[in-house]
Image (cartoon, rainbow, N blue to C red):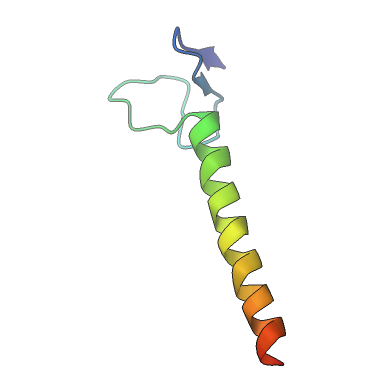
Length: 55
């Protein structure tokens, strides 16, 4: 696990972090969670649309 000065957290195995944050290609835990929340929100909207259409 690595915590940056700006508060970003990297956990090995999450967001592509392999224990060494060279090249900064890994996503922070905060970015991973944000992405998941966006996907869940989009799915909820699709489900609500399907419910409204009677499908």
